[in-house]
Figure: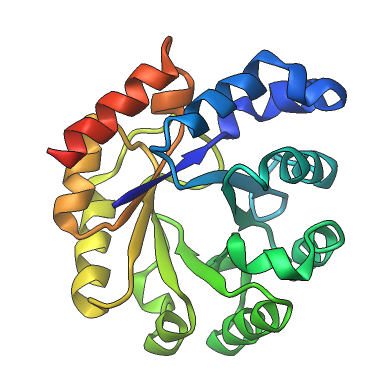
Length: 239
């Protein structure tokens, strides 16, 4: 089990401090969490309409700055909640050298594509671009059968939303637990990641259902003591 830390709740403050990022309090908070060595990735939720209505999160300039300041400290996981993930990947690849692309994760939404073929073509394109770790994500309301066997085989892992994608701070849905169980049993060799409403209680539920990785955001980042909460969470899950 490993944790990917979502910094979505920090996005606005990071954007406001982009020119002095490394000196900002929030950035230093992220570094403190990285220094615990309890998180494996920094999870960057890239959002654009129309896939996410009325929401833009993590403009390219901010992604570039975060990559520049973090890539030598921790790997990044880019969750592309956008209608055209290829366009975003082409833009971020201008500053992510080809030799470093395999160190980071790309996660694309199944809802971004109209067919199985389009999805498979996108995964193939991303691999040719040098990204070897690719996840396919399914939003909470989307039927499980949209991740076909061929798509599951083409991806490195499956990310399941246990809330509706697009905003942080939502409550974990039990419908998500059913999906974790479904995919864990259907594809036992394909790691299932979980994103949405994860806290001490729901983390245990997700892991019991078969999850191998947890994307955790506001439970840690909006707490009064993020480091303490992170350590409590990982200690509890290790027991």
